[in-house]
Length: 350
Image (cartoon, rainbow, N blue to C red; front, side, top):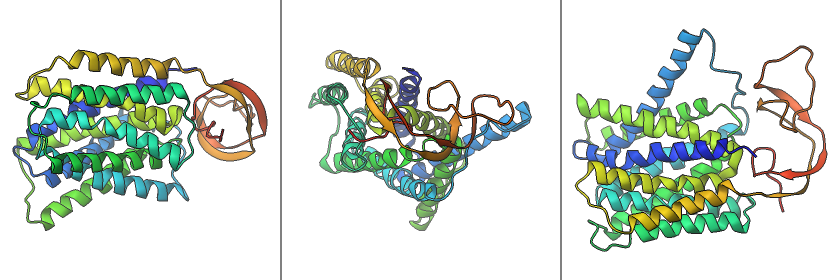
């Protein structure tokens, strides 16, 4: 079983986690709503430059990706509203009320929210090993935030960040349902919608858009910490499902806490080491998961990027096709048993 989706989720967590203390620094010069808009505008602009660069330097589109269509747009609209508008505004208002270290640790709740929504609303399978992994990572976050002397930790700020984590939990599950589509297209649309909404809201509230270094820094941080991170996370969702991807993404608060120690005037606690060990244990449980049972694949017709040696795409082509490639194809019923995760081909009930 490939561990590439786990690596993608970890990479996404590192990029996003580092964005928290850096956002805290930018809040000295930018109001929360303005910064939220710049971060997502930066994600849109950064990915747009990436797509244009691929066309110019490679002389062709990045690859054959199935477009969004039909009900995909409803899932994207819900994900954009929850994760692109509500979540970052709540996060940045919360950041203005508590320390960057404490805020980074509260990001751990995104994995919990994602997992609970995945199991309760979307009926995603989760065995004891994955629940244990999530418990270990959540315990690590609690352990790391145990020191009562760790800066400001107000109720209002904490509730705002918890609301942001719940909104991102919804976003992750909505996005999971379209994760077989082009991740760059999804991230660009979310970045454009969220950035335009937040910047427009900031202007309506009497704010002014910054110029100079704060503008550049905000856009660049958004391109990396939101744009690139989101593309990697969507790819991880395709192979892991929302529960497991969310659990691995729980590494983000630990990365954010380390980043806070480096860029903010905050000191480390002895709890950092056992917390890190607990998080490493949680990731190891997911990496070593071996879920297998006999299951039936019903007839299905859809379009997504695929290869023909994965055991689920045995159809033929009129002429030789390069891999990976995307086109509409039909899966015939298959009854078999093998090790799998709740990826786009294994979202069956148990």
